[in-house]
Length: 178
Image 1 (cartoon, rainbow, N blue to C red):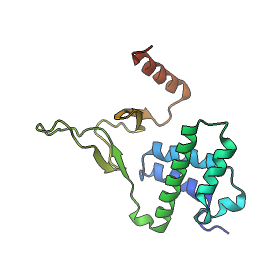
Image 2 (tube, helix red, strand yellow; image 1 turned 60 degrees about the horizontal axis):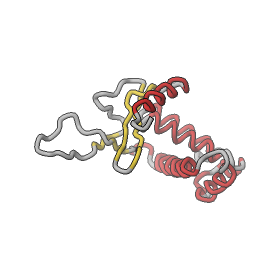
Image 3 (cartoon, rainbow, N blue to C red; image 1 turned 90 degrees about the horizontal axis):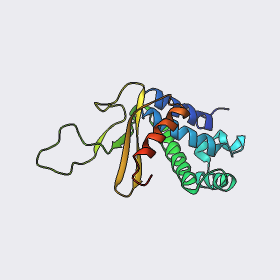
């Protein structure tokens, strides 16, 4: 009997949230990838009702079982993403009409206050687009070291591995210690 809290329901929610602009499509996709991987270690009974699942234990089982397949940073990130996906899903199930996600971007506003050298990060609703966003694309930020974040914009939603490698090669070319 379906209860609306299964692993499949969670994945459908993430697809829906990305398609309908409830969250950036790239965020929904990243959460879904982590969720599929982590929840794959569960039995069918455990997948049937995520509201009753001991998520920390499930993530630990995944970490132990797949430790050879991922680096420690990736394992931690998968755990964080799954916790976030389940939290968002449960919030949505509780009150879909009032469900919102706040996103934070580190890009400065278009018009800077002339008197301030440091501008605060812009916070906007996930459904808003920055002026330089192009339809069919997303943005992603990558921390490269403490205090330094690189933001990539206009990444195609259908980016191929070959295109990603081309971008990676370009970024490698920019490094000073080549």
